[in-house]
Length: 447
Image 1 (cartoon, helix red, strand yellow):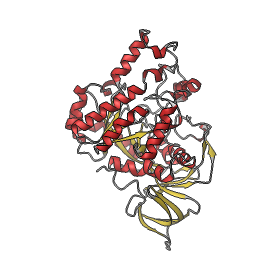
Image 2 (cartoon, one colour):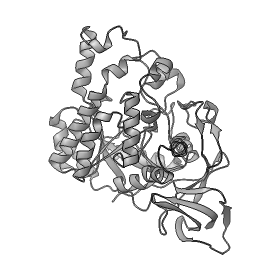
Image 3 (cartoon, helix red, strand yellow):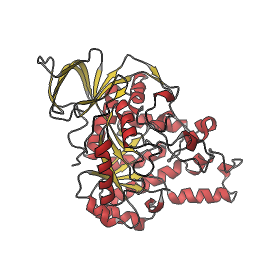
Image 4 (cartoon, one colour):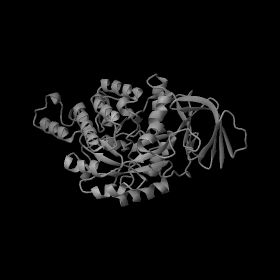
């Protein structure tokens, strides 16, 4: 099967060029100023951008066990509609993916249903060190996930008695939800005792309490702890969903040592704690939203290359679940369908360059996670591509959403670039508003 993209503006992390691009048997085989041959399909890309498909290394697709919120089929369909060609799914499903066998069970679900390429995490728990060590030899498991703050069951690991053996005795990349659980618990106890001055006048069912309890220092201490462990044991570590300016000094220290990378998400760039006053539990997530000054600091860190990835932490919940009172409403937001257009809109607004968006969404995730043959517009690489119409605007509404959750926190936001076509391993997975029901992604290979 040969597919020829004609008259395209190819955008990499270091520049753009006008060229044709040939795909054969799922891979990019030629990139030249002009390619003249007969292909099975020719796509005219005049006036369009061609980017490497986004690699979102932080999603929760809810399968198995929570499929009323979303499953592999629905959420991967939303992904390809947004130009995301590869995802990495987190382990907090039911049952949790804390054993190699459980991860392999998930792999079978993905192989049967996923529209995009996929990698899977194994979750750290209090008594599964031997399983994590077994995962070291499985190049289909992308990383070990550690929840250093409140999570489900045995997956909350705040104490060094559990953390240090993992950093010391495993070799795979460790990805950390870095918040300080002792501080979170202490602030919650102080509030309940009426001894937390910052919470004066805030009722226990007020969603704003969330950002008071899980404050900037909670995030900063968690990141410092994770970086210290990475440095102590010389272990490659990735800090997930960074939200606070105070986290950046520790990240820089880890970067200088060549051991630590970090990511943030659109919600921490586009929303802040004041939005909770108008949107309530629809803006509840972990880590919690921070201030406007943190939005600014995170944008600057992205532009400077300090934070090297943008991901979504895509966490679909039904709108009736999010509408429950604070304390009952689940944390997390959906986002995988709109992250790339949102970041390209930020580039149109001058916050980043388009080349930086490519680095943050494709090239750097591939490099940080060691994902083979993906993330770049290069001959010999997998043809995971997205065709963007940069001159088309669109105002998002809930009607656009393909995730089973059927809502978006970005409702009403104007996009200044639109995904037209997505190719996964050279096959059209999304085109003209429609997901190809027959396309299937492949498991990524790490190393």
